Length: 118
Length: 117
Picture 1 (spheres, rainbow over the protein chains, first blue to last red):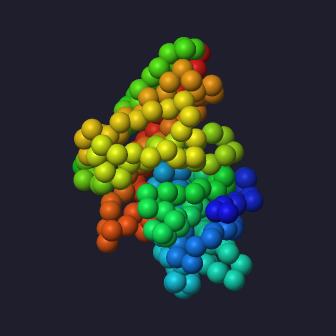
Picture 2: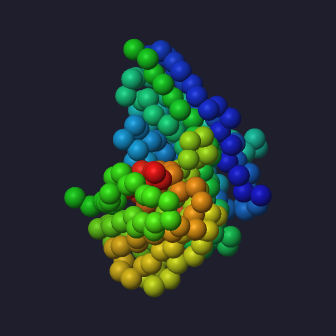
């Protein structure tokens, strides 16, 4: 079965704290892609990162970093020194490879609502 | 500016009415998608289209219909057969590269919030 689980429904932190959002996935495919999206209060989803299943290197982009571990089927997202502007709902998503997924379908987790308080 | 537009932003529907949500993109993307978002459930795929005049059902297509007469446009009709249509609807598009869609990120519109009165 293909599934994405974000066990943390809501997280609340104080500004400047580090926070990690968890994502666990299940897939039948050996080739797949993982994504993180941010949904601010305006509603539009904003693409943050894509990772393919053959690349387990961690990635850092400014205050954002991602930890991809195939052994535990996880793709966690860490925000360092959080800011109020980071408050949003964050979604992890899975896209299986073209053998199973000609249409490029994304399977989303339930989302984690992050609230950063000043 | 390239992007995806959705209209209207808010839509109210009476019981038994069909309503159509608009989605237009000027990104020259091949594929377009419709998702439904309910609180605590993430996004679920309604329909998608890889090319003009062709579309496929997603996970929750019952009570919805679409058309893809132009590359830029992918309107969604919520019919009276959809029993619980109150939700936030998001349209997305992506590019076909190297013969596949799975790799490419989807770009999203601002959404339409539909409420049944």
